Length: 148
Image (cartoon, rainbow, N blue to C red; front, side):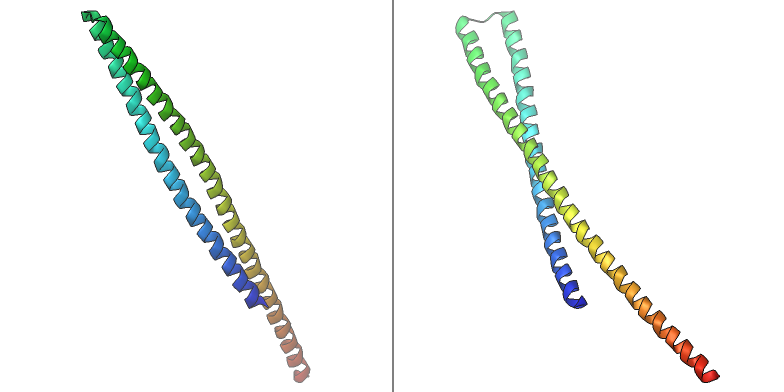
């Protein structure tokens, strides 16, 4: 019976370890995607700031109405791109949080099985020690009977 329970526990621990491994990989991928989204967002914001400085310089030198309209149209498109990338960043960061929660839950589950297994090992050791103590007591009792 103990070996069957140990086999079941090993199987459950193996499944839990696979869940941890899968969750770890998913978390790493989510973090990679979030980092890439952050980099793209930062790049777009930097590009917009540079373009804004370029517009300011052009305005100081004087530009025509058509050039100014082109700048404004490009700014609208750039602002849309920044907004879209920000939304992707927020989504990616949310996905990281979800994957982190999944990873923590899988870790907790695996650790629970480890604790259960350790308790079982300790329980079996106590039973074995108790049996050994009973055998030693019985041996000592027999030895004292034969000595008399």
